[in-house]
Structure formats: C-alpha cells, structure tokens
Image (cartoon, rainbow, N blue to C red):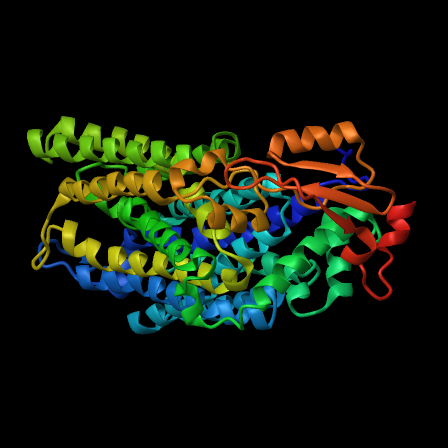
Amino acid sequence: MAPLFEKGSIVPSVLIGAFTTVGGILYGYDTGIIAGILAMDTFKRDYGKPDPMHDDSYYLSSARKSLVVSILAVGLFSGAFSTGNVADRLGRRKGLILACIIFMLGVSLQVARGSIGLFALGRLVAGFGVGSVSSIGPLYQAEIAPKHLRGAITAGYHTAKTLGVLIASLVDNGSKSRDGKSSYLIPIYIQFIWVLILLTGFLFLPESPRFLVKQGKIGAARRSLSIIRHNDKDDISISVELAEIEAAIELERALSNVQLKDCFGTENRQRYRMMIGLVAGAMSQLVGVNFIKYFGTDFFLQAGITDSFMVSVATNMISFCMTLPSIYLIEKLGRRPILTIGLFGCFVTQYVIAVTGLIFGRDSDIAKKMLVVFTLLYIAVESCGAGPPLLVVMGETFPLRTRAKSISLSIGCDYIFNFLISYTTPFLVDDAPGSLNMGTNVFFIWGTASLLGALFIALFVYETKGLTLEQIDELYMTCPTAWRSSSFKPAANMLDPEMSDEEIATLNGQRGSNAKKDGDDTMTLATVDSNGRGDSDAESIDVDEVFEEEGDPLLNGYRS
C-alpha cells in the first residue's frame, strides 16, 4: 500500500468518505434530540396540557407525541424520495448543498417558539433536508470509495448516525435541568453547527466521477477521479478506472433513459434488486431500534426506571461503540453472515425482554432489570450486525443506471416505516386513554420482524464483499441464487499492461479466468463460462482502441 498522501494513496478518498459521514451525525442528532426533549418538563409546559392528576404538572398526549416525532419521518421520506432526480440532474455535491440549506430553514422554524403546529412544520422541513442528505450521502460515498473499502466507508455513515444520537442524548442530559425554554432550545440550536460544517465542506469537495461521466464530462471526471485517487490524471490506473466507468454507463445508456418505472423493470434483475433494497429499508426500522431512540427516555420513565436519561445515554453509547467493529466485520465476514447473525441476535434479546415481562409482570423488579440489561444487549447486537450492513446493502445493490432513484426509493421505504412506527408506538405502549398499554409486549413485534429479516437475508440477499459496483452487476446477472453468491468469481477486467506474467497468472487464479499479454500494446483475455470452463477463443484487445479518446493522454502514461 502506498504511504499516506503519496501518489496513489487511498487517504483522500477515505477522508472524503469520512467527511460525508457528518451527514450521518446530522441525521442522528436531529432524530436523537427529540427523545430527551419529549421528557423535559419545560417542553411539556410550553407544548403540552395541564395534568389533571398532578398539580403544577403538564403532559404530552399520545397524539402530540406522535405528531412531533412522526412528522419528521414524513419529511425524511419526502426528501429521500425526491432526491433521485436532484442527484441525477444537479449532481451529488450540489444536491447535498441544497439539502443543507433546506435543513437550516427547518431548524429556524423550530426555534421560532410559536405553536406546536409551527414546531411540527419546522420538523417537517428539517426532515426533508436531512432525508435528502441521508439519501445522496451514501450514494456519493459508494461512488467515490475504493472497492475494498466501500463497505467500510458506507457503514461509517451509520456509525456517524449513532454518534449523532449519542451526542444528542448527552446534550439533552446536560440541558434538561436548565430553567426556561433554553433547556430544549439549546439542543435544537446545536443542529446549526453540524449543517454548517457539512455545507462548507461540500463547497470544496469534488463531484462524483460516475455522475460526471454520465453527464458526458469526461475531462472533469478524470480530474475528479485523480483528486479522489490522489494520482496524476494521466496515470494508467486513472484511465483504466475511468474506462470501466464509461463502459458501464454506455452499456446502461443503450437500454434507455431512466424513469421511476424502470426501478421495477426486469433488465439486470432490477425488480429483484429493488425488492432487496425495499426490504432492507423496511427492516432497518422493523427491528425496533428507533423505538428506543425516539421514545426510550419516556418509555423507561413509564417503566419505573428513575434515571431514564442516563439509561438512554448508555444505550446510545453502546450503539456508537458497537458500530465500530461492524465496519471491520462487514468486510471481513461479508454482508450475509453478519446480517444473519445480527438479526437473529435481535430476535433473541427482544423475546427475552417480552417473555420476562409476560411471566413476572412488567412492574416487577426482575422485569425492570431485564428490560435494562437486554435492551443494552439488543442495542449492541443491532448496532453491530443489523444497522450498518443494511445501509451497505441499500447503497451497493443497484446498477448505475437506476442507482440514484433506487437508493432514494429504498431509503424512502425506510422512512415510511419510520413514520408508521413513530406514529403508532405511543398508542401501542402508553398507559393512557385510547392507547393499548402493551409495555414490554411490544418487543414481541420487533423480535418477530427480526427473525423474518434473518430468513430473508439467508434466502435473497447476495454477498457483494470485495466487488466493484460494476462486478456486482455481473454477479446478479450470472449467479442464480443468493446462497451461492459467496463463491462468485468475476470475469477478468482490464489488466495493468505492466503486470508480469506471474502477477497475471496469480490474479487469474484468484478470479477463475485466464489472461496473458499479447504484446506491447495488446492484452489477451480469456474468461470462464458459468461452468468454470475457460474460453479457448481468447479475444485480443488493442489498448489504443480500448482507451482511444481525442486528446486523452493515457497512452503517454501507458508507454512510459
């Protein structure tokens, strides 16, 4: 591996991907602060109703809780759904800048200190902005990351979300005892910090090379790729990668222009892949993690746990810490193993909580202790084995032609279920008129969904560890079933002309293909068929023809 910041270093692409995860912090902080704010006495006094059971006390009805929390999910969905066209027309970078401006408008409405309706409107607008950021951000990361780090960088976005939630819970815990409106306004104002950092950075970062190639801006794409890969724009490696991107885009352009209906078409097994994205989006909510993040503080308080704010801080601390090994395990174990184990672990821990409450009674000391202990275990398992890898699946499953719109639909599905859960949960668990008062029995719902999710992963989700986005297309077109995908070997792509015969033989041994150099300016490739047999009629490829472009300096770098 090249030293840091020298020619060919991966550091710039890693730093760009890491900076983009500030959008994840923004998302996590925005969604995380509401759990503590709902439990603050000053917020209840300003936006709630007098409690008839207690003098000088106020409460928020289940309906108002649902409005304040679920309206954000409406904005999240609207933002995610609309960003497919924005990202394809304006570009990934400009789309992110626009989303940041919209988010700032939403935060401004929240601090205007008007009615509950104005506060909810601010949550809606801010949700639209952060939903757009969370849709375009992983797309941008997936398109700039080196293939061997793509999963880790994309998973880092989820890690940033958990960091944002953790910071939100710490801020809530620090400001909850302040007198007056500042107790809940300070956490809201801090959102400006994250969005200004993100906005400033994207004024200077490069655009996605894949977007630029799709727009026909080959020169700009070469310059962008050279920045991201920290290499000369005339270098052979830049030209090879650019040529692969061009070839993939030209192949997809031949099919037709992209419309929303194309996301559910049959070309490139798009309908199947869309199903995976939609289910992954739904599953990230149905495991129940946002029930803890949105309503955990208030739920623990109702369950008789005195310091519910500190329990929420503990859950968010564990959530953040456990996403860190997930980044490593996603690339080490692969997507399928970590998801299957993680979702099954969610099922076990949640059923323990529900069964304990059912047997010993929700008000018993043992039920309260088991609620805290196994909630922490559940958060640990979900944060390592479910949240980050599900985001990776949504970010890398789709072909380039439909990727922006497909990711938007997948994340939009995530937000639809986010809305459904955030709206219905108060009516499910609250001990109030018109609510079901399920208490810990609600974990039966999340646990069952987790078990079904583990089965879905085992049956339908393909293993994409170590593959480029272009090779993932080949995987879906050639591998008939998900459980065979781990043994998939991509056909040989363009090889470095300066490789020795031994290096080429080693590469071909790993990929199940045969190749040899056929002279100074040609390479001969012989790929294997679906049965693993070599193609005896090797195709001689002229490098000049492969990379021919008016004014393209590739051949100077190739011949040097």
